[in-house]
Image (tube, rainbow, N blue to C red; front, top):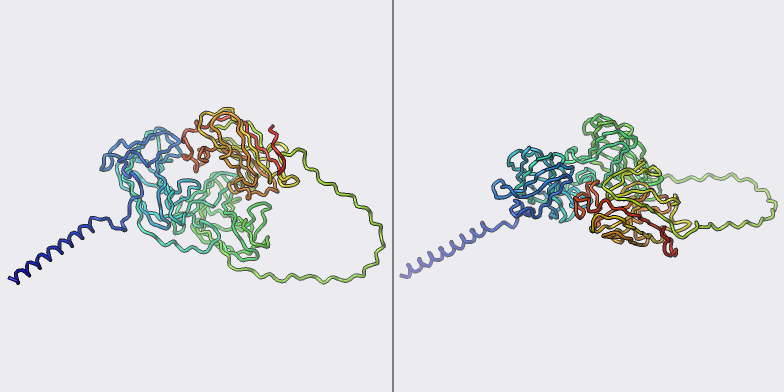
Length: 576
């Protein structure tokens, strides 16, 4: 009997433990793995309407979830009633990790088989490429599955401001129907960032878009990173549609040490084999040669590596205002295509300067001088400052509209421009009569005083709040070459007269201006209540301002705007 009892206990023990093991295995298989990636896109199948998705077009169209999906009740459905140049459906504020591989899967088609592009970018200015830029997807006329794998770039820590964007332009046409379903964006794995030589240049391989490279031409052309590089996904790509006499690709504000050997390595070619020249110079006035001037590079028609070694000169202490410049003129022609990749600028060594030799003077007997009566010096008159204690910067009556024009500059800027685009959010003006073409610090220190603003709003199409701002440019019409007032100080919702004032030194980027030198041009900016420019001319602002895309909420708007500088202790301004 004791033997049977022991057997029963053993059988019961086995049943209990086998059951426990099965339960544990069942739990393991049913529970998601701790390492399993999740979809970071919300409402991926459009089963919750269009929530979390945003549709924008500067043409006309609709965005609904009124059609069945690939195997579900609903799908995203875009109808193009008027094609536009900026047509996108996107989801914003996505969280991405740096140096990480992600996979985007989605189902889509268009009734006409027209394509689209996919981008992953920073949602707001400066719209940094976060790993996928304008990836073209070939759509069919029935549901098809698509997959894109990319590695995040353009940031170093986890971000929560990414935008996943499907762009229909420039492929869209009147009557097009686009359909989307099952949009899945998942993390695949973390990757070790590639080792890049220690270069003083940023974004050397154009993998983060075109920032901070700058393209300028007084002809016409484009600058993108829409081609594959020499062994990488992207490269700089310049298209010359109209040749110019000043055509350059450059990066500015580089730091160089004096009396040092540097090496510039880059890969390049041009479709026609046309050449270019390379320079290293001071970015601003007086544009000193920093060791390399118009070095001609013989380009081929396929990728080739080039190397230039030079010794810095033209300065005695470390500088941070150098410009590396690739000049296509005078070699460029209509239709030329220039390609750049892996632009690396590194310091090789410092140069030991030979000791300066001082010539030994030849001694000449000095004759005994004959005393001469010392005349009484005539006192030097103290400079008299210009009459008045204020300086009118701008006093204009202007109607802000959607029309874009060009304003002639009173002098050529350093990139060779003689006119500048004006209109919508950014209106350009030459300064008021008698505005100095010299220092704003001496003999009267206007730059250390107060900026006063007044705006008389005569007409305004809606009660949408407007923030108004003035910016002053110096050598070039770029973000780095201007100082701006604080737009939140001058805000209005309707007609009337409004005032604002602030210390000159509190202007945004005040320190970027050399106030001892002539300024170039003034600009007023129309912004929404969030501080976003109300402008559809520049792609980085499209769709961001409140009320977008209805420009009629802000334009036309007729104003008289006046800006006055008053030096320290100058009192209140006298308005014209």
